[in-house]
Length: 319
Image (cartoon, rainbow, N blue to C red; front, side, top):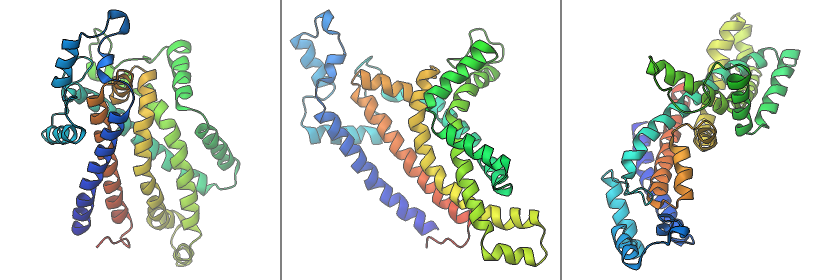
């Protein structure tokens, strides 16, 4: 396992370099001028002297390859550059946003996996029953509904019809218990983002568990006199979880992408909403930082999934 982890890390380094280079190239080939977003056209634009000053300050007057190498060097030092919109360091503004996005994505994934696995097990145990059909129909209906519709529906129900939860932001002015207030603001975004995850993991858990329950070694364990609960929990459930674990890495990527929509709807100050602002403002340093962080998150999540897969199923070997 140790050798496998080392190989994966060594492979991840050139992968991240290729991703960053391609993204840097695409941004460089994009039409328009990033400095044009600094001043609105009705304000007269930038003077020639000011324009040349900012081109030199942001390194836009240098050759492409030299600019990429300079960006890579500064990124390895933890410096993602200066935003072209407000001239503030990208790392300074990303830190609190990254924390909020990680909290939202991790809570949504945890809720989606736990509820999805539980619902999938119940659906498999009572297969072809009315309960199973009801869960299946609900899961497919949930998967067909866009995330933003679920978000607006939750706001309508829990903010307007039954005003018990806040609809936007992360805090209430004058709140006496900031942590509990933060949790209250987190509930609706987590529910909106995890709804699809619950349906997804429920479907995969049901199909995986039914497949395992039809294996010969399950029937052998039952023939030896083991109780149904023991066969289910000790043998079938653990092997069926490998399907769910495999999906976690992929769903984490979908969660981060879906967080862009959810954060915009609930005005949640995370990386997703900040990324949209960066795209609209052609804030290239911010876009590059977001892309790199997203790529690193994908590489790490896939690595953790492989490790968890080997832990759950000892038959798997990466040596």
